[in-house]
Amino acid sequence: YLVVGLVVSVMSVSACGSGGQEAPAEGAGAAALTQLASDILADHFRRHPTTATDLGIHTYDGRLEDYSRDAVAAELRTLRTFRSQLERIDPATLTLDQQIDREQLVHALDSDILVLDVIRPWANDPDLYSSGITNAAHVLIKRNFAPPSERLKHLIEREKAMRGALAAARRNLENPPQVYTEIAIEQIDGNRSFF
Image (cartoon, rainbow, N blue to C red):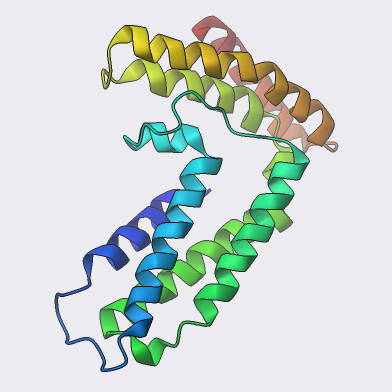
């Protein structure tokens, strides 16, 4: 999804507490925005452990994304809750920089909601699954962030969950467009040879 925009937004919100303009007298908005931005990012990394690993956050290295419909529905509910909480933060209680950050977070959440609820790659893109699990293994291998034995342990944990991810693909996919299917088929030989 659009995690890069979300990460930039959250990092920007966290960093702008004291620079630039003076905070408005109310001040409560800035603290609420910073906390909510941190919560959004923490939730995203928990639900997308491959992204977390790729960004150097190793809390979830032994986990694989939950591709089930229940997980998709739960993420969508959480994104909508975050969006509602963000709407309740009054821009007037924020500096101009924080107002911009808040607006960017609103758009990042709207984008993720649109992807899960309308575009629905989990229901129409078979490559999401086959290339997704390949990337989950690749990010543990490509960087030397821990001893090989530790990374191998996490890789094995992720590989044990891959059967479930492929089973979720069988349940979730609903007559994917031909071009998406063709792309997945073109990618599959490279994915298999990687393993």
